[in-house]
Length: 283
Image 1 (tube, helix red, strand yellow):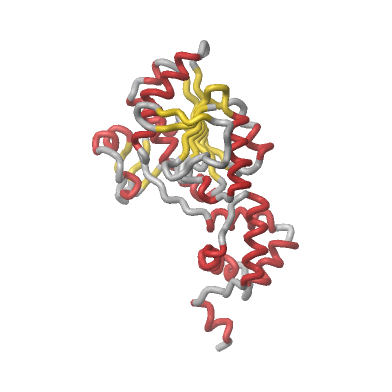
Image 2 (spheres, rainbow, N blue to C red):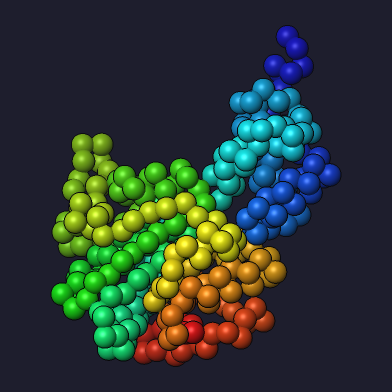
């Protein structure tokens, strides 16, 4: 038996120089930065893919990424494999309460045309934008205005899952039984399907937050949710992404980040607002 076959059960070794080159290419395209400590993560997640394409070393895989015409679509595969998508419905509830009880009423009060455009940036498998749609419904806000919710991610696999709207038990760790009964249908395989009414309130698209030209096509927005996403970026990329948000938001529009994230030392373009329920950024 050849040594190649023997090693099929093991991960390919990712040499330091190839790791640095690969990380540089991902960074150049997406702004996502993998620190030295992430080398093993990349090795573990990309080894099976390199093997699937019949490469017996990371050097050969990287050569393919440099020179093969299929490289761009292969990078799409890489983004799907290296981004972590851990999320669930109604995450960070204080912020969501601030959204329905303070942010939306403030925006509606200031508008003559009662239309609010919301972007869920880095939406993963759809739990966040669907949570927003359910909360707007619960608060009776659809009777007071028109709401457009656009949700995006760079990872095509999670977007496919989001469009389907079918979820397993672990997505409901912060969902009350009443809300689950109202908006989901239990299926034979013990998964739950979101109601068409809520599903039709959200549109999904693939978008790289780092791509200023594509982001600008979104037009003007009132609220941007980008929670637990910019942790993947280094400071230089974070500044680009936050500037993209700033340019898309209307004056007085809101940016909601994850609780572990802040704009300190990144941007002075937003002011931190201390609302009754939570702290948020406002343009």
